[in-house]
Image (cartoon, rainbow, N blue to C red; front, side, top):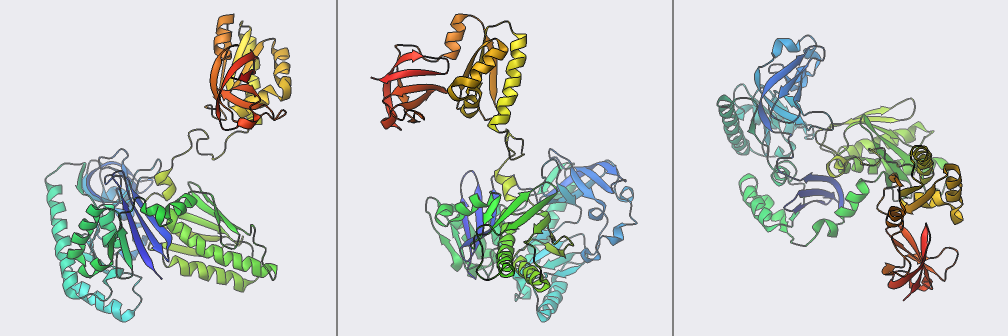
Length: 559
């Protein structure tokens, strides 16, 4: 498998994409070095202790207080002991209000929730992760050889500082004791510096900021299994070479500078990012996935779509589900979806087929460095899984809830909006003494209110006893409407009719007249201009003289 890293460094943001066989599988975006919080270490002050929740809120100087669970607050423990040992520990026995503590952010603030923190500090290096508060040696689960695991455990045990713990990272496979020692020297020096800062400052205060995105990529992702790293910035390229001189000089041969104008566009990454923000994902066979990201969980539905197979139904379903399993694993990484994930594969009758699909999903998930657990298939045939959520998803980074539909993902139909507007017109007609009412709405809504040949408009005027001017305005959102009474003939003319007879104006012919193709239709602030003989000039700007003005449109002739 060809594995590449592509880095697009700009003033406003840095973007990193990890590609496997030319296909993007992971994307990291950092708009500002201050934006990312995970890994940062603070001196905080306990604001509230909540015995009922076995947790505490800690002020670390951010907008929202950090959340500290009891299992993340108790004194030094073995990371593999799990949470069972916390059942008999009361948060009130560990923390007191006003107490100053050193904490590290382990989960970004998401939505209304503040960041999650721990008192169990971890300082990652190239080959080792130093754990100053825990006396423990751990080996990455991705190192599968028992012989190598034993060798690394023995090496780590020799180099680790007394009373501290270390975790051996996957990239350490095959390295020697000298490289471990280099990591330990740097990390212990960093920890002493953090302790010194903590002793000489008051809470809340930032003690240590984690590396910027490109540096983290070199530390955490760029290893021997990566075939190529490409950057589009000369300054970042030179920085990368300097860092690699220190941490792993042989990797410099895999670093390339490519100063093209839009590297993400040329590598096809931008297209994949656009697709990753859509709800529907098409598979090569013609089937598709529907991915719905909710606050509590992410639901993924598999549909056959255009794929009808060639042999029988069971074979079609199996092939669809197998391809879907591969794509789902990629989408989880690309979109960085975390938390609870429910997958609704197409129903399979044969147990062997279900096991085959589950095995494919598990195999693809192994490529994901983020901790993921597949819990199996429920009685309803749904696959339950969890994926650790540390940083915001791709959608949360680049999108925000729609200010019009407030995140519903839907807007009201023209029919619904027009019914609501009629109700408002009736209400205003009963309250105002003015003879005329002006209504401005989206052109599609305005057209429905006017009706074919003005039939709906005449009916409204009969029921309200008012003169109604309904004007389409292209700047109005589908659900937006402006309704106001007009008093006096001058105000009626100035606000309802944007043109006057005899006036010469420049307009763009947008479309042929629906019932008279010889004429063209132009618009001025949503007001329709019927251009005689303009049907053949669609798309062109023309000068016209206004001949006659009606309440909903004007007739004009070419000059």
